Each structure stands twice: as structure tokens, then as C-alpha cells.
Length: 459
Image (cartoon, rainbow, N blue to C red):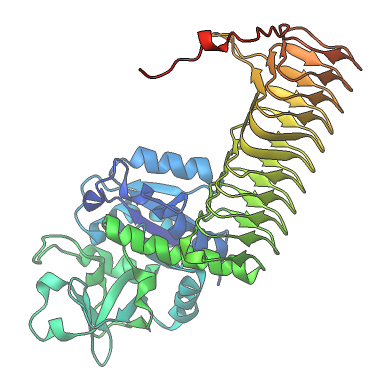
């Protein structure tokens, strides 16, 4: 395909039936938006395509999203009043007349997230001998779709409201994806009118009897699903989810009950890794090779290296885990948690904005916040780094090869240097030098025979 094509993505709709507080094009799906799923296969086609958008409802938010997430310089036009697809195309060409300098113009909608690269490639491969092409499909339930009415030469697309009884029986219908020669558009675009049941200007009226126009008929109608309500959004998500999991399986990722898992589009998983049931992988998360993610785990915007074992019902967000670490079950890694090689974080341990260096262990029932724990150090059960003084956060630093007994607290800011031993039940408020033993608890007092003064019995 020569680099002489413009693209008009129609993204002006409100999405009233979706009942979302955003423009329809920004409806969320698999960690992306509807318009992202339309745009990505186009960007894969040819980075020299002149891609443009017809925006309308909350246009500034759609434009902001596109500028933030893509380096490409797109063309932005505006349809102030939604007066049909033909009117949208007129707005695009009036505000971007340079489109006529290209040989072709592709038109598609921002609410069809299941379209793939090969669909567009098919269009481009067949346009040379035609002035315009429309993608169509056959369905036993054509209600609501424009019918593709063919003649010896050319075709017409008749909208549902304008069909007569015979036209309503036609099973071939319009998908809403078109490719035009710009010379054909220049000749016919001004002839569009709104003399129809809806009082709108239709792109479909550019397809005419006796003109050199045709359709490409697809058997799989699901790829043309348009999202207009929450049910259709969920249908699209399920199809995209199956595609995503199939891609990962083909790369050597093993799933147990894949139908129970949720995986965002941008997530990466390395070969040999195993994903158990009811796992959620979200955002820009990456999982390396040969890792095991047990059931019920949620991983959001986190990086997991090779050969990591994440046990059941652990929850990660904005965290980093290096190779051969073991986490969970029921562990929580909050933003800024950084676990180095061969670390262990056990059940009911919470780590926030802290570094655990190679081989260190926090096995159970502990909170590690704003801390740094050195290599091979062991943190006992019930440890708490007391990092907040009511106004500011402070840091706890524990060196290499330290042993911190059960039920200890560090009152930050405080440093425990390498090779130190902290006795169980201690509250550490002062720095502990290297190779030191520290104990900070009151002396035990035992009064024999006095328990009856304190034990209460029911009357």
C-alpha cells in the first residue's frame, strides 16, 4: 500500500445509552478505551497514514487522551452538531482539505473495537479497481442495519427506516467501514442530502447504482460489533479477552480456567508462566518467564521478573519484584514496594514504599513502610515500622544479615546497622550500631497466686 491515504475516525458521539460520564470514544475496555482499539491496528498498518478524527461531545477530553498516549500527530476536526455520518465526513474534509491530496480516504467509527489489521489490509488490497468499497456481512437478523442492495453495476445502502418491505428481507448489511478514492468523494460529496426518514446526511448515500462501487462480504459479523450500551461493551470485552489469552497461550503461557481470568490489553506475560483461576492482571503489568501466579491474585501496574511465585489472594499495585521471590498468600504490596532477588514476603504482610534486598524475609503479620531492609535479613512475626508521626513519614533502615525478633517496632527515623540482633518484643527508638544486640522491653514481674484478682467469671 502506498502512503497516500487519509483516515477519518468518526468519534463525535455522546454514547447516551452507555450512560458514562465520558465521551463514547473513551468508554473503558480492558484497560484501554474504545478508540484505542480502533486506532492500534491502523497504526500497525503504516506509520505514514494521515490519521484524523471527527470529534464532538467532550472533544477536548478525547483529544487530550490521544495526545497523551500517542506520539503521532493526528488531525482533529469538529462536528458541532451531530447531523449524520455524511455530515461528519463533510466536516472532516472542510476542515482538512489536504485529505484530497491523498489517493484514498478510509472512514471508520470509534466504537468498533474488534476490527483487526487484516480487515483494513483487505480493503486496501481491493480498492485499486473500484471507486469505493464498503465492508459488509450477512446476518439472519438484519434489523437496524443498512441493507446492501446490489445491482448489475454498483450498489445502494438503504437505511432501516427507509427500507421497503422487500429491502428489509436483504441479509447483507453495512458494517460502517468504507474506503473511497478521493477523486470519487470530490465528485459526489456535495450531492448528499437529508431527504430521508431520519433527516440526516448519510455516508451510505455515496454508494450509488451504476457507479464503480462494491462491497466486501465477511462471514464473521462479530468483528463489526458496534458498542452502544453496557451489554455490547461487555460482549466486546469478552471477545477481546479471549483474543488476549489466546495470544499469550501461543507464546507459551499456561492458564488454568482462563475463562475466569481478567487481563488488560497491555499486560505482558513470559513463556512458561502459569496463571491459575480468578487472577486479575491490570494496567501495564509485566510478568517474566516461568513464574507462578496462584488463584485470586490481583496485580496492577507491577513488574514481576522470572521464576517468581505469587501465592493465593495477594494484591500488588505499582510494585517491582525481582527473580526467585516468593510472596503471599494474602500479601499486599503497595506503591513503591521493591523486592529484590530471592526475597520472601509471607501471609498478611503489607509492604509500602520500601526496598527488601536480596534474600531478606518478612514472613508473616507485619507492616513494612518507608523502609530499607538489607540482604539476608530476617524480620520476625508482628513487626511494624512506625513511619508516621502524625504529620510526616520517616524511614527505617535495617542493614545486611540482621535478625529482628517477633513483635518488634522501629520508631522512625531509625537505623539498625548490619549483623545486629533485635530481641523479640523490643521497641527500637535509637540507632543500633553494627554487630550489636538490642533489647528494649520492661523487666517481667510475676506475682504467684494473684491471678484470681484479675480473672473475671460470669455471675
